[in-house]
Image (tube, rainbow, N blue to C red):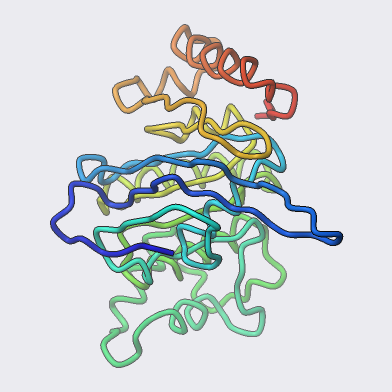
Length: 265
């Protein structure tokens, strides 16, 4: 795959004509992604971009391509920084069940240069202070997600990818995680790219929403929310939320993808 790093670029990541095709038995080919083009500019540092798409649209495949976990069938991808330092948090947050919170984070850090203060700072950043010696195996999904997030932050990335990790969280826990991501993004000048099927989740979290149609996944619209009142976006009865929701529905309806979008809160 043609790709590269350009430290002088005006973008953090740029995808050009990305496609992905899988071959199956009998010589058949399945197009998963088709002609994907988007970028996150350096002016968008400290923001959250959400890929909102139906089930089976290839959004997870797209995140894995950005993370370098799989190769696209065509197209180019460019980065401003080291693309080997783009953590990918899976749908089911991962942690080592035999290690406590502190040890889980330590394994993601450079042990030669890391300090105890660095580890404790990460623990505090994800609101796990006081739980350093707790083990993840009997904890909630939200707790395990915080560990995964701290491990991702440990490599000092400029971008973190999160793949539909919130759908199995309890409502209260989900709201706390949303607030945490928004605060970390702003305070650390860090970018998140999320993938979800949930319209409400996308509106509540995002500075920019990228709408993708069902398979083969194509980008059908970008919606910018960074100049919107976050309080109003969290109010499902507000005029702003209703307007954004209608804009999303209209775009998906035109692409015949509306019926597979999730509206749960």
